[in-house]
Amino acid sequence: MLAPVVDEAGLFLEDVSISGSGKQLVVRVSVDAPEEQTGSVTLDQIADASRAVSQALDAVSSLRDAYTLEVSSPGTNRALTMPRHFRRSVGRLIKVVRTDKTDFVARLKSVSEDTLTFEDEGEVALTDIRKAKVEVELKRAEELKESDFVDIEEDDADGREN
Image (cartoon, helix red, strand yellow):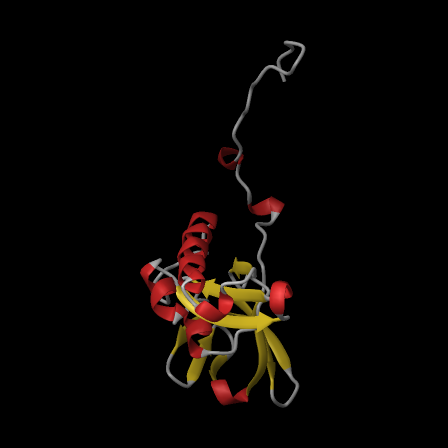
């Protein structure tokens, strides 16, 4: 029921879970950007999806009592478990633990239906992956150039220039 609503909001329905009962009912909806979209889900997209999901749930007679709706995106630390997760992560640094418990960190170059290709690691079958997640990369200070910095001048509360 919610997949078309989330799709109409321009997102992909990742997961739905319902916990609790009565007035303590919590509906958790996880949404992600479509495969073909690069970047992350924005707060505006989450807000739009939340309004659309709320309207759809309000129309369900068994949910007419109070419930708490939580709409979120999986975030960068989520486990990569499906081919679509890997396709959204092409170009990113991925930590992989293989089924034989060996691990590596490498940049994901491409994804086919059952194989991933990594820089320096070559091809790895999806069935050989026990766990995988994106490694968050922060730009190293020595890689920054002077032009990456912007001078900001403003007056503070007592009129002095900062």
